Image (cartoon, rainbow, N blue to C red):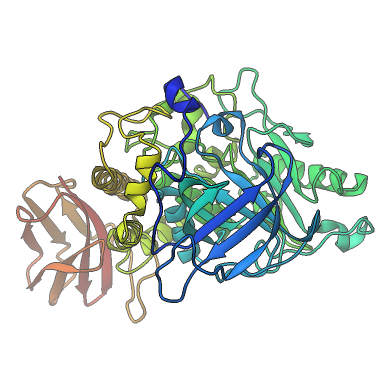
Length: 536
């Protein structure tokens, strides 16, 4: 994460007492109370952990906890995030000192590895949660997270998200467990989790330089098994398999279903991952906080998503606050970045079959009620907004951390001055981004809803002008006789206009429609046709 503007030193060094600033008396959010005998740093120390989550929905720091136990706790993140006054933590539930104990917390599957994420640069608290929610709606696993308010060593720390660390587990990344004896045959082929990040860890270097590289390389780190437990045979297999995937992607016959990249990676996983990175306009996309995994005898898959603090236009770094442009092409804008994206993603955009499938997936996700329907996205944002403000949690957090108007990660100007403005800016940015993506990815050449037959009439039907301002005309070749029915839907699937004719042409008045993408459906005796139009 590049940090171009730092907090004032007085704010970085300030300390605030729970008893005097932003005092928490009651909240609708769960409360987590942690006490330790020493300062929390990068090495785990023992602490006491209490979770308050009353069935009444009203929680106070003096309520009876639903769970108490001992934990190991340490700072998480890189040097920059650890310099923030509001810290993030890794938490491990223990039965006895240094002995992990699986525990179900806040309704999440039983495990022992957890995270407490401060989301300090994300004043909405929503960005990461939104991406996780959307990826889940696409049928992908994303870490489960719950909002809470946190007190550490009697100091109120504000709103956090508590939840799952990326980990191999039947309730998380559900892949096979590798043991030190799994060193040959099919047992050697999974499961693995690898990671691309700004961390310096054990792993290997890509055989192919990223686009726009000068001295940059792509490095892959072992996530599971980690560097301390992976065997030499497993380490060699990791490198060999990913090298093979990269070489196949880089070959002349990369689109070949047998010899190309599809022999090594799941197309659906790549599509959903790419859609999410581009929808969220993620500054760190493809190159940091990027996980990918492989199960036994199966292909490579991408995810889970992680850390979206700098997504959805929260930084101006490398044009990331502009609603146009591609995240996978960041090197063209910022070739001096220490970390660049692998070549895979730009190469995939030249694979016609892949892009046709991606456009159909995106078009489907944009339909009414589906994952990327703007109404669905805004409903999630509004729900979080209501939840976090119901009993002044947002106000308490920003009383403790008064950072409105203070640049942290080179935020776009003008910066919001309160939470309502932050939410409004977030929605505006998402709407603009989706409208631009619609011009690139919404496709009419996709399987239609059940009961509709689509026919390719490219030589018989024309729609013009396109883009259009006030009027669009549809011309059907004279050889197509009989009644023609044409109607226009918006991207939520709502019909906004309809006409019937026996003639060869008809026109629609678009002057009352909002700018954006619409779909024209034409039904004739020969079949049905769909064309995308842009209303300027």
